[in-house]
Length: 477
Image 1 (cartoon, rainbow, N blue to C red):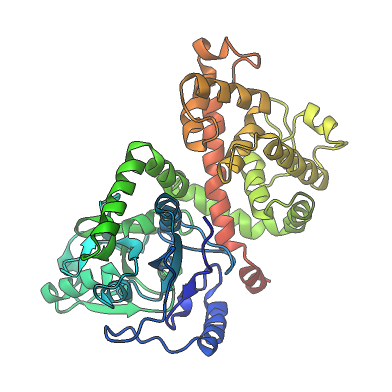
Image 2: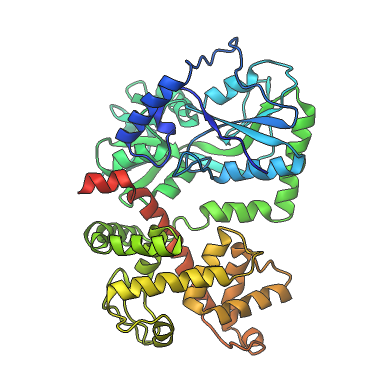
């Protein structure tokens, strides 16, 4: 199901994903010059006319909802949920990305009793507004205070007296802080409209601000980028996460309820959660800090070699660099007890096959390891789709394709999906059990290690995608 290009409404330059703060401001000025002023008042005409085969979806940008490295591409947990729902009801989603989370309810209330199908999918809490209905809960989240690790932990609301707490403007957390301020009038609240939640947490990491109230799921993701940021005080109870829709649209509500019942029953929801959240909180803060340190001190020596490998293979150089970091921590002289060597930790047989004469030469190692990884990814069956294809290729880099095929055979015998990385994560460790590997031509393998390695690469790749952008690289020079 193809999606029309999302329209980003409002004047908040934080909606430009993948760009740093300065670049976002420039893009925002350009966007404002091209878009009409956005009046979100309830009586304003809705500019978003849609066809009979379409439905309207309001989102905001954020790590749990929607994002893109390039303006023309989009992904995210909520984004992918909407795509699946669109396929189920046979309509095309027309996505509107709003600047503020509280604008979504306003837009849903507009044009009461309209024939247009519309919903809000943005990691939302249920609404008390009788004009709005909530779909089934598909996740739980909480509001949590984030602070720098060197700060004295906040363990009680009374400690916030005289403190300044930042929060993203228009968010669920902003409403929570307004309620808290009634109990703690001496607390100062700053509603921040200069970026996304991750940008706000970056300010804590850089000690520009002391405290911020954020969604707990966002903080879990952020710890992979800012290991010196930690959560302290939970504010309020856990909140169910739902879609919102007009309460008078009984047909759409029934479709939403049937959709979530199905994806919960058949495992689709669990697989999607794993795709976006399954690899967070895997590494210790000290490991993330060390990776970021080496990214700044060691990686620049080899960045161009990875870029050259991207040009030859078509694979994002940051993914190749993440794989290399997992293998050797970017040490071209690395050697393991099993005899694999070099930046990409090639075996002797693989090096010979790829034409490598010196495994300790970083140029040869990166070139050959990247091409070998590309070959593995290409050799997987066409039924294996992205991103599962990439993660299974990463595991095969560790195991070898023979063992990966053996793991896929085990998955089939257990009625598991061999094309799903979510299913293979629990299957590959069985390669170490005699009752399984004795039936396989490839024999025994440490499949559990391959799973850990792959999940680590996912984290390293996320880190590199955040920090290794053209703008950030320019600022570091």
